[in-house]
Amino acid sequence: MELVIKNLHAQIDGKEILKGIDLTIKTGEMHAIMGPNGTGKSTLSAVIMGNPKYIVTEGSITLDGEDVLSMTVDERSRKGIFLAMQYPNEITGITNSDFIKAALQARMKEGEHVSLFKFIKQMDQAVQDLKMNPDLPHRYINEGFSGGEKKRNEILQMKMLKPHFAILDEIDSGLDVDALKVVGENINAMRSDSFASLIITHYQRLLDYINTTHVHIMVNGRIVRSGGKELITKIDNEGYDWIKAELGIVDNEASKKQAIILGSCAVNKGAK
Image (cartoon, rainbow, N blue to C red; front, top):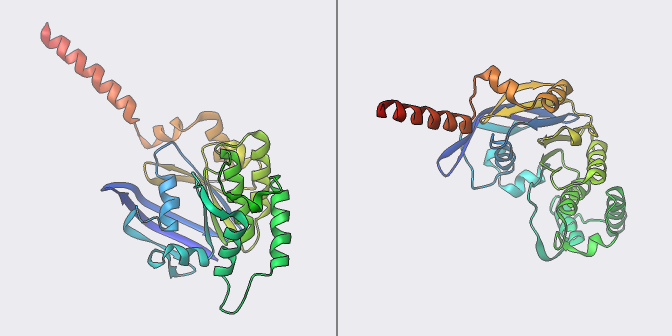
């Protein structure tokens, strides 16, 4: 299967965030997108999943030739697109097991039903794999969970739903060292000919546990460089200043400071 993004432009509240994204992800691949804050990485994940706050003004997203942008959010999910959110919500009154069981049932053909025995067995195994509390299936979704527990719960949902394309938006934030290893290894274990992931992260540490096949650097709403794991090492060692220098990009804060200094000098010079 293939998820293809071409010349994608998107905005929110009249401000353009994505400025021409081109990206192709095939099942069997593990992609990572890295970049400074505010470059549009989370916006890209939201647009792929169909968040109505973001307006696509140009470009396309297709899944095996089908127009993803014309699909509702639930249709995208049924087609096998999954989003692990950066800030998972708490939902009182619905248990984790009921939620996942309902999601699985929604993907089945009319007349088919989730096997309760198989579901319980798989759920218990996923809880063990992620080293979560055994009572997790009976707890309300993310209620009273720590930040790290919420992120692990997103991965648990992914393991149960078995999507074709998983978008993981900063799944490593809020995880301690041990949890990071558990989450990374569980993501890596999902890799197969029917599964691909797009991992959005700032840091190398999560990717130490994942056999990443493609790495992309995103700056100012565009993917400006693609490569392999060598890019992860370079970012870890040098940050993003090198790519900004190559592109001739000056940080806004640095520009503001420079403008203030120049402005002050001009005033002082005029006063003399």
